[in-house]
Image 1 (cartoon, rainbow, N blue to C red):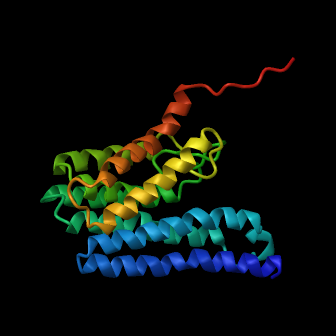
Image 2 (cartoon, rainbow, N blue to C red):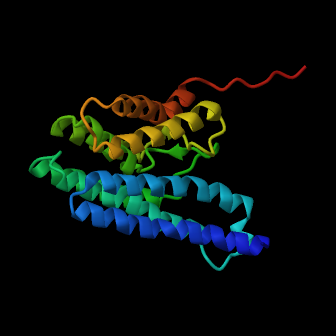
Length: 234
């Protein structure tokens, strides 16, 4: 297979995220939250591998007809933002006006963030929370905190979108990548297991989700606080 065809296959792989988002939405409409999250975790896995493949096969050169970045943003908004926000609103985890505030904050803040050309830092991390609401909402389904706690988390994370607080990219942020990649992989395993058992109370996956989520949320900020050691010369 030529590099050109490989580049096209990467674009087509990215596009499958739209199909996965539709399957997730259909499950959400039926209130089948576990199935919805399983589709979203699958979409997250696809999103995690298509970027490295796109860089490996240089899709912008070998198949420039399609804009892979634009395609990825469209799919990400569906799977990272829109569907999780819908699930949070319809699940009953939020009551009354708190649900309306949460979904408006999520979808409005995220679309502005996605359009911000400053969302990436020089070390390929994210400047501000990268609108990974699919991950946040899944953890909320697993842990079921109070609606006030959920509203606080949603508003606080949205505010951080528009700050210089750093959030690591599991693949592209080189610093601590030997820890971050396994943590991200563990999160996917815990998330899959939690959804598979329909978020059963007391599942060990819930603790795993909390631990890995805390790391993924705070690792970038910790890197800002702890200066990176530079090798001395001479």
